[in-house]
Length: 492
Image (cartoon, rainbow, N blue to C red; front, side, top):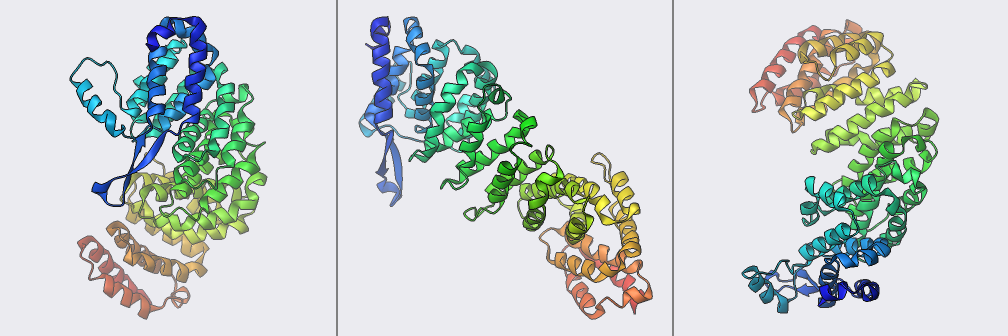
């Protein structure tokens, strides 16, 4: 029936309008209690919204519908995109489940499953509007499949947004204007889908050409207090994308962008620090396009805030926080007294994590130490970090730390107690590599102190800690402890 109606151009526009109105008016799903799961619930598609989606698919399958589809392209795109977002993980109504099973054994060309139906309808609309290239581009990247996976839906939507930005930019302004109000939707799934789409657009310079940059920045900035964790993450990702899409505009919007990143790092409803991770990654990208005066007001706050992440159990948090610390150090060089203390406080941690079991964290530490070298007030250390900590070079860790300790004791002898105390903290590290590196570090410090400096060392405390570590189950750790105990003879 719907295909037959689609062949009548005089009726197609009116029918499209009515179906779109049905989608906007009808709630997309209902929560249904699942007795098998006790107090759990599942989402079940509402019959009218599902019927309207299937009708749109049928209607747009005939060539004669092209003119009506083009006329209503922005509204159709917005409605079907949101319909897809509300269909992921949604079940068929019970009375249709039997029909779906029967159709699988018959010749029905399309699934009645809400997500599959929404996906096919969106693709049919794009094809009928002449955007076959978008459908192919998203398909070749695996985007259509990702959109149907609840945990990866937003990644698929980002691929769609990227394809739209590259292949049909002139259609974006009206789509963007229709999606921005959806960021306040009561349906979390709609907020996730619309945020993912708009955030990815900022990865492309087309938003600047179409004068969409400011509206998108304002819309995503307003989401920093959204109740949905994923929405907050995607919003920060979008703001960070400006570094790729419109880097020349970052200075103009620097204060707005920096404030959002700092707020993201201070997110109180983020138990796994995923928002903070996105904020740190995005801020690192933005810093490449900012000057010191733009960053100065938040420099110390961010440096102090990210330090605890250096030892996070999550490798991504360790890596991103350390890379960000290295990027921040560029802005502390003009006023070395302000930032050098932060570098000295983090120095032992960065040096020990050169032995991190995660290769990406090791690369991050090499980068951060190269960047922080000029803040240490020691030309020999700056040269060492620059020459020996190249990403592609291997590192003989023992020889390197020995030389580091030698130059530290020459230029910063007063730091001895602090350096030893920080290393003692890592005697209880969850990583065996760091438990072995920390006593070795102390041993080389002791090797390069003179008699007066040695008086700073609390030998009783140090020997007690080393004796405890001597019981470590890892032989490599015990070997380093024994070597350090031997070097303590110098201080007796």
